[in-house]
Each structure stands twice: as C-alpha cells, then as structure tokens.
Image (cartoon, rainbow, N blue to C red; front, top):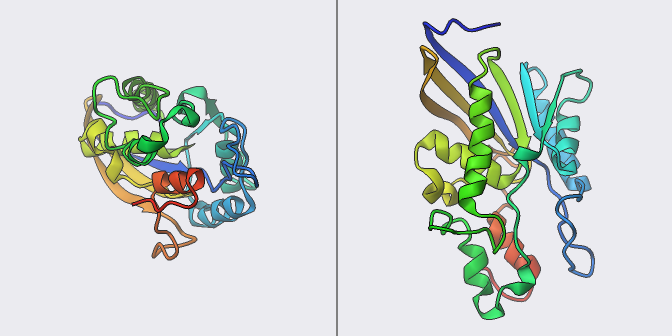
Amino acid sequence: MIADRSERQRRRCYLVRHGHVDYFDEQGRPLDPRSVSLSRRGALQAWALGQVLQDTHFDRVLVSDYPRAQETLDILLLGREVPREPMAELREIKAGRLREIPEQSMQDVILGAYRDAARPEATFLGGERWSDFNRRVLGTFHALLSDDDWESALIVSHDAVNRIVLAWAAGIGLQGIAAFEQDTACLNIIDIDSFGGQLHGAIIRTLNFTPYAPQKAGIHDTVLESLYRHIQPNKPAA
C-alpha cells in the first residue's frame, strides 16, 4: 500500500541480530567471520524468536548476506514464502588483525571498542573506520525509509549494525552505541514517524529482547567481554 505523504505515517521496523555462532575453533583459533554458521544453540535461539514473530507480517525483509544472518532468517520465516533482499551493506563491521594489537593494551582496546567509536578516525579493532561503517548502515536504512510502499519491515543482521540504527533512533549517534547491548537472536522494535514525506522521529518500542532468556538469566558478559574471554581465556574481562 502506497502511503499518503500528506498525513502522518507511522511504520514499524523489526531489527534482529543473528543467533549464536562459534567464532573460534576447538583450539581457540579464530574462524573467518564471513563464513561461520549458526551453532546448534544459535538455531534454537532463532527458533524461539520465530515463535514470537510467527504471526507478524512483513512487507519488506532485508538481510545481511553473511551465512549466519541468512540462516537466522530462514528459521524465523520457516514455512513462509516472503521475498528477501540480501545486502552486503548490512554486513558486520570489519575488524583488523587481533594478533597485531599489543598484548599489554589488548584488554583496553577490545573492551573500549564501542566507547571509542565517535573518536575522529576511530576504527573497529584496527579494521573498518566507524565513520565509514556508520554511513554504510544508515545509508541503507534511510534508503529503506525513503520507500513509502511498506508498513512493516524486518532487518536481520549483526550486533554493530543494530547499534548504529538504535543510536540513530535515540538521536545520540556513534558516541552512544556502547549502551545498546545486542545479545544473540535478540529483537528490537522501532517505530518511525514521518509527515509530508519527511522523517519526524523514532520510538524504540522493544530493546534487546531474547525470548529464550527473557530475564537474561545466564547472560552476563557483553559482546566485547565475550570476545576478550575467547582471546585471553585466563584473564577476567574487567
């Protein structure tokens, strides 16, 4: 349905992070994040979220072209024929080589990666610049918003991608992304208001909801703390 641009329009975006994956092999060596698949736990997490969304209609479905995001979407939409739009622009931010980070500064660099995102020329662990990533994600999101022909959209992507959109919705930008923790297979719901074809504001309805653990039982580490524990298994992420 094409919206009447002369009236206020409120549309809903469902923002999902992919389910759990193992980023390291049994010897603790990092795997290629571009090709890792959902773990059994991740598949079960996605299934639980799929039960929550099973009666929700989506006019548009956007998904990162990485396997873990597409596998999550497959489980979420099990039994439903819904056109999907795989997008490289929704890939996770690219990290640099972790082994190039000096060991004495490893903890501060990893645990501070989100807090430092707004610094000029800041990169994610020596990889992609946050400013470039921010433009990439928000450019794709704003392209979605410029299309009037939908009322309900689903985006399945990654931790940092979701943080960028949520920080945009909250009006705080890169300096606020550390506050938006994104557990695996989590759901965020954002309503976007427009009037006369112009964006008028956003409302965060649901944040980091995990139906497999609604009280967050057993979930204590942040995304970056979990990464640090895998790299330095004998050191606390404090």
